[in-house]
Length: 409
Image (cartoon, helix red, strand yellow):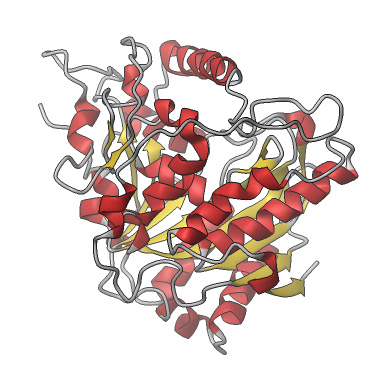
């Protein structure tokens, strides 16, 4: 039986999140992170108890197939896109009182960010720099923190309004991520976004089950085994409780068909949160959100965040990054811990995910230092940015990044 990837009719079934889904998934996730904390090279899993960055060991030399990806010819649209090394940074004033949002200020921030980035005078022209009416646009969100710390539906609603103004019909707009049930938990539902497809690579059957009558994962049909895949010479074995969230075992990570076959352009809308003394932002939202079999990749974290973005599925389709930093997390990430979430009121705009991540990294590190979580910046924690820059994905050197600051508060 085939997975119904190209339909959103599962809304009713998938909204019935059974006890296994929530309880088992998050207990598995916690166990996985606890195990990963043993790897000292993994940013974000150690706690800086003495307020100083701890030394890190060199990641193991795990071989990947990045050289093969780099042989594939680039296109005019390839990352870092139209505006390499340029970032618009806006203080929005849109969030207050623990995340209470002002939609009018969100709209003003998104439109001003696009106008400033593209140097246009009207918002329709600004959007048309990145998309055309014939495109199928995938909006890549991060819903992993449920409503506590996920991409805000209010931000996505403004983006959709902009795409509609640019002439893109609703049927050509997709909100997507890895896990359908997490999208629903974060507020991305058919009721909230009528006429917009909401898709997850990993999804349940019509009655909430993970397996069909043959014992095969339905979501296996949602990964593209014919497109170039990411290979890393490392693998883990999963039991039947964890495998539904990884889709496949082995040493290959496959890109989702949502990305390879459905969309022609991608707008990346990550959230601003720490991973130890660094961030998981644009690059991580793309690489881990678009691939199967990712749990093993934490063992080569720096490579696996940057390298998948150099594959055509992402490199040639991601045209814009809009960071939702209305609320942000300075500690406890990459999960969502309410104790460390604050109204940061920040949004970042850029076509260059490396430059945007560099600006976000600096912002989070400064916040951590201001709050006494760490004392000094550990330059090793931004090494993934240098790797991504070396792959031609953008600009990592802070001295070469041009930032346009605006205060709409």
